[in-house]
Amino acid sequence: MAKEEFKEPGKIFVAGHRGMVGSALVRCLEQAGEGQLLTRTRSQLDLTRQQEVESFFVDEKINTVYLAAARVGGIKANNEYPADFIRQNLQIQTNVIESAFQAGVSRLLFLGSSCIYPRLADQPMREDALMTGPLEGTNEAYAVAKIAGIKMCESYRRQHGCDFRSAMPTNLYGPDDNFDLETSHVLPALLRKFHQATINSDPLVRVWGSGRPRREFLHVDDMAAASCHLMGLSEERYWSAVSERCSHVNVGCGSDVSIAELAELIATVTGFSGSIEFDPDLPDGTPRKLLDVSRLESMGWKAAITLEQGIRQTDSWMVEHWDELVAE
Ligand code: GDP
Image (cartoon, rainbow, N blue to C red; front, side, top):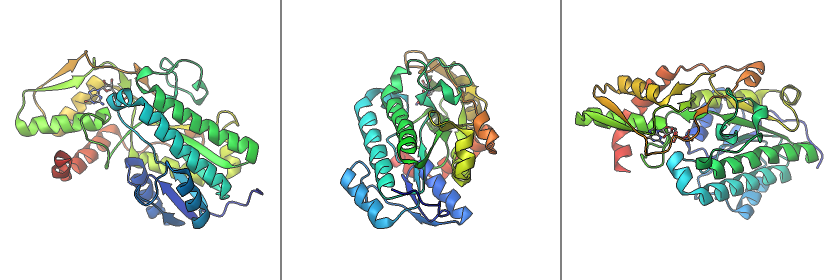
């Protein structure tokens, strides 16, 4: 297919708009006021069904795609449901990327995760650390699917000249996060646990693992802003800053905290004054996950929301939605 000029930004499909990242993307794109936003709920369009996705792309004449739809979860969910994580993510991304190509989409952004990097990668992790060592076991299935997504985008560029880009966010948090204690990531889980303990006047909160692992956290509104920034770059600017076989861009804030430090900060924000106990019987996962964000910064973007500001804002959102969260 002849590659057309990028028609700025035309009809924009945000895949996964009900999720935390997708809904932040919708807020960001609505604010920018460019293009015509298109979304579909899972019951309207099941992205794991190839035929449905192909017809949707042909019918809708989409110009730009943000691929934020994914099966996601924290350390426990990833560890317990690896088959679901690898299958659903491979299906969703394969269907969307191939259909986008077939339908002549001008530009696509595939969203991944920092767990694509080797478990013991040098810190901070540069984009070229990809596939230089074994992955972390607890989320290997998910990571393999995400690596396949990056490699698909690169392959479609090499074979067909598609402008399919990839962004790899660090651990994200914010409004619309998953606050379920079994399947969530650490930050929303601790917000919920500490808030609940404050309500109950509990003397103690138990935190999984040793408290020593270090993680980098980025507010989802920063992630959405970075995604829109990356998609706003001209084809020449983006592809001159990356390489054909290492085309993804890390998205983070450039600093990390230990889980113990995170717990202290969340205790302060939620007004919890009891003690914090660690449970070393539960897995720590990767010892450290900090992204090198120099590629992104060289492309003109930097995070704006500090961890404390972001946690306070997310705490307010959680308190506002508390009744719905505990009823689920
Ligand atoms: P990861 O970054 O893929 O390891 O995912 P998580 O956000 O689920 O976990 C990050 C770290 O926080 C791990 O070391 C967990 O053991 C630790 N952690 C401490 N308390 C919790 C909790 O209540 N929920 C979760 N998901 N992780 C916790």
